[in-house]
Length: 113
Image (tube, rainbow, N blue to C red):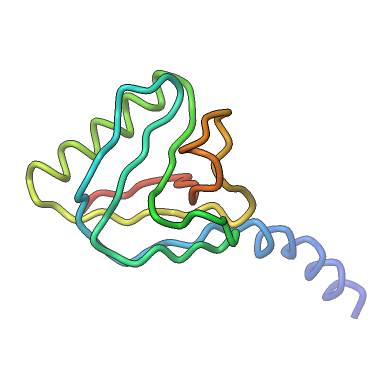
């Protein structure tokens, strides 16, 4: 019995901080050229697990290297018409210190198909 309770407490953080993945969708608009973040839109519905106040676009924040890698995936998917899935953060909304980034749904990972 104690082993089961211990196992439950060990697994609980995995469920609390798990990101929500969207279905497969296409990239429609990419807003780039900012330092430390990009914004983008897709054809699918935004799940918004963190209840962000502005669920109209995805925000991806990171280092310039991370931004460049994500931007490359998004551009390739958009130009080829390929599908992507977006992992939406369940624990944070966009910050970035910029008004139009604040409150957006944070994309934590992207999978291309």
